[in-house]
Amino acid sequence: MSAAVASSDMLNEIKEVNLSYLLLAQRLLREDKPMGMFRMGISEQLADVLANLTLAQTVKLSASNQLLCRFRFDDHAILSSLADKGKPSSVSQAHSAILMAGQPVEQIG
Image (cartoon, rainbow, N blue to C red; front, top):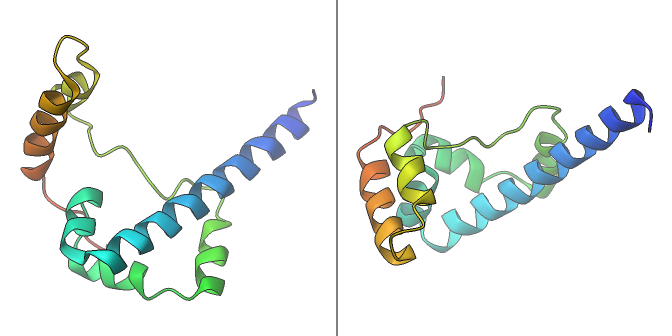
């Protein structure tokens, strides 16, 4: 496989992830805006923008060559909590939720 083909495949995968992420974000926000904002760690302003995108705008935005989503747990404690195999998953998920709730939401720049 050539580097150009591999790069093209990677860009297509990024676009697919972006579209899936945007559609999920819109669904979360439309079904329960406060919970969607909490789960994604976003501000109300950003939530309003995402929830009100048309399908055409969503598809156009997803075509970016940059990932639109990012890991919320830049903190070692959160990542370790999520990956801890010694704890029951409900305990590690609750611990992670508590740690992430203490982080500030993202703001539009």
